[in-house]
Image 1 (tube, rainbow, N blue to C red):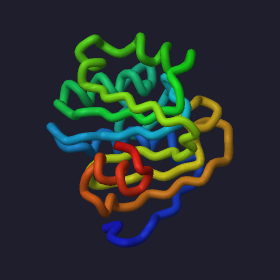
Image 2: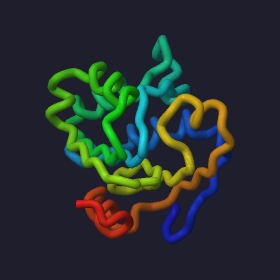
Image 3: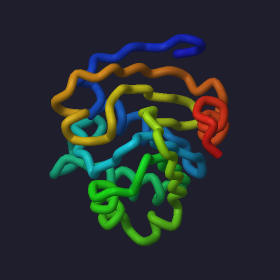
Amino acid sequence: MLRDRWTFLYFRSLPWVIPQVLLSARPKSEVGIVSPWLADVTFDAPILEHLTPSPTLSWLLNHLVVQEVSLVLVVREREGRFNRLWRKLAPETRSHIRIIQVDHIHTKAILTERLVIKSSANLLETSLHRNRENVSLEENRYGSVRRWLEFEQDVR
């Protein structure tokens, strides 16, 4: 159990740990993604090895909505990469996503009610597959995506 401690992860673990944390979200719960910039990145998680081609962020978001998971995306701006990701989402997925734009946001986190991945990586291909980034995994001490966003980032 991760209670009250962080687990630091190898920077190359991001493409496989992110999908595993997202897919661990309970049905009818909430997932949060905080990243100044988002793109439709590719993942190569062992849990998803059976999928060809490798799953992308848009695939994961569509899958989570099928599981009745609500999504909160906190971004700096809706720029070109974000708009390309948005167009790949099913219309029914878009209606389950709350987008919060926050000027000067620099935090990068993936949240479920139970777990938080904190990283220096934006959700961009270069950050996940080339850059040397910091990565930690911890228990979500607030037990809620909305409370974590409110208390850790003053985002409502």
